[in-house]
Figure 1 (cartoon, rainbow, N blue to C red):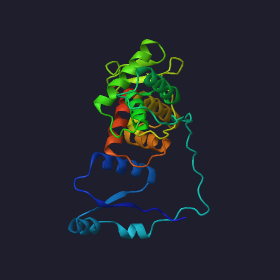
Figure 2 (figure 1 turned 180 degrees about the vertical axis):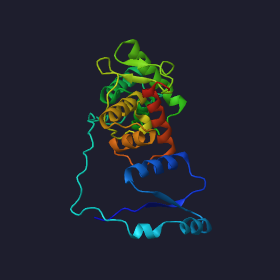
Figure 3 (figure 1 turned 90 degrees about the horizontal axis):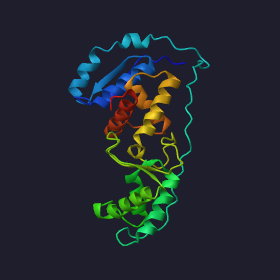
Figure 4 (figure 1 turned 180 degrees about the horizontal axis):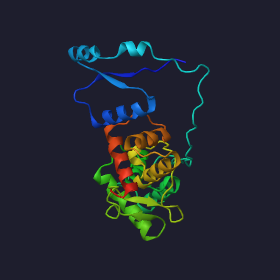
Amino acid sequence: GLAVAAVVLTRWPDPPTRVQLDERELLTDLAGAPVLTLPERPDAAREAVHDWPVEEWLSATPGPTGGTEQTPVAAVALEPYTAWASRPMGDPRATPRPQIMAAMLEIVAAEGPMTATRAYSLYNRAAGGKKLTSVARAPLSSAVYWLAQERKVILTRKDEIPWQGDDLVRLPDSPAVRVRELGDRALDEVPLDEVAALVDRLRTARGLSGEAELKRAVLSAYGLVRLTGRADEYLGLAIGLVDGTA
C-alpha cells in the first residue's frame, strides 16, 4: 500500500551508456513514476538532490491496501531445449572423419537448428579442448560438410545469412526455426532467426513496440536479467531481422 513517489538510480555514470539510457526509459514506463539519477561524483550528487521535490514525495497518496488487480501478462510458450549429452570424444585432429561425422550428427540431432560454431565447440570440449582453434575447427567443419553432401544434415552457409555471421546446421526433417528455451546456450549461441521469431511472438502477444521493452521481454523469456552490451547488440540484430532492416 505504499505510494511510489519516485525511483532513484544511484552511482549514475557520466556519461551513461546507451543501454543504461534505454533501461532508464523502460523503468520509467514500468514504474509509472519519475526516475531520477544520483551521479557517482559526490559534488554532482549534492547538486542533483537540491532540486528534488521531496515535499511532494512526502505527501504522495498511498495506493489501495490488499493489493491491486493487474492485467495478466500474455504468456509466450517456448519449446523445451534438449542439450546434447556430452561424452568423451577423440581429438578432432587425429580422429577418422567417419567417427567425427557420427558424433556431429548426434550433436545436431539433439540441438539443431544450431550455429555450426556451437556444434564444433561442443565436440571440441568433449574432446578435452579448451579453445576452438582453426586447426581443431577444420576437421569438424569438413565432417559437417560431408554430412550435408550425404543429405544427412542441412547446412546453411553464412554468406546466405549474413546477419548471423556463422553457418547454421539442422536435420532435414527439423523445422528451420524452433523457438525454444535458452537451455545452457549463451544468448549469442541462439540462432538469430530463432530470437527474431521470439521477438515477433512477444510483440504480437503483448503489444510491445519499443526496442528497449522488446529486449527486456526477450531477456525475461529466456530467464536472463542483465542486458550486457553484447546482448544489447545481438537483440538489436534480431529486432532488425523482424523489421527487415538487418
